[in-house]
Length: 490
Image (cartoon, rainbow, N blue to C red):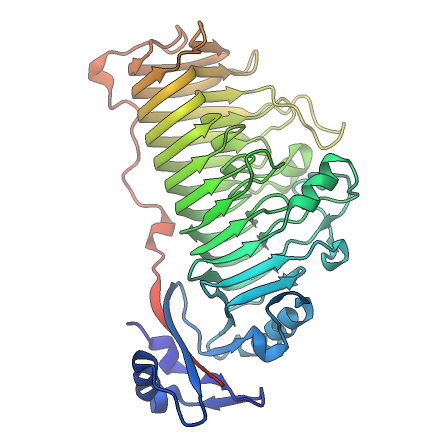
């Protein structure tokens, strides 16, 4: 067990008077571990909360939301309690950082802001309930790479859990839950009753060293996890659930991020399970921050109306060096989808996908250069996206309606497409035309059913043509350590 961070600074325990008392962990750690492991209580009925968790950083100080007046009854508003707790714990950012523990209960809250060198930890029986009161979500400016909100012009609601310009932030738990209570938001959105873009569950902006892991996210008003303008991001072990007809409930959307790893996640979504983005038309071009060095692995997705992994459509800052492997999809619209349009500019290049297992799909492969949907009428019609070096290999699919729909841009085809070692079993309601290809160029090897003429078969000897890079991404060097939390309560 790695406790180096615990030994390097005092840990803050809280007395029944709710005043911080700083003590030296080295003096008491052995006693506390004994109490935790044996379940011993003192004559004053002091109890101990003890657990271990994996994180990129351990913390030297801790508190519970209950210490700041939080009430987990599902009806008491805790927005001020969360913000007060985090504001207090931010004082320890230079003293080993801090952890806010959310114990069992149903904790109703609006939007709150995180701080640096900080961990938000949800107990397995803790539920954060997103407030349905719009006033609990402050309005913030549109993203500079988008120029407007996604739902409406102008401002947007702050996410339920929000962070901006931070370093070393961990959102984790023992599979505790964040419930966005999105039904009211979906109803208002469909009825056109919202003046601003709906809040996300988690959004972290302009930040580095981010970990989001081992929690369950349900019923988001819109996107679930949105790291944007970030670097060194790890998203791992998430369960994300939304009704499959809920609007825009994307699972994980890395947006203008560098060095990101998404793995071991299970997502049921009303939209794309993972959507890789980098800005919208002229705003994304001007901002000029690509998403690159992205790893996606061991992802399971259910999305009947959208993609397992989408690249775009907002990709005007560029998307490059994406590696996806060991992907499972059930009852989803398409496997990996590239969507863009004239006016987007930017590029999608150096994309590598291998070992996909797909069951009940509309399309296995889908690319479109005519997605439309512009932020305004000021986009540049001469801004043509470049799509090149797209590689798929080792794919098995069954109960598929259509193998591929690949539609580039007239005069500017999508090039360097490579597909190898693919077996697609067709559904009873299969389309007569299995490969619909226009304005593309590439090669295939050992693909069934037979691809279109624009993807000529190179023969079995070329099955390794769509090589998957074997070198490690920088994010693979990010290590987690085992951290300990020990806290007394009465």
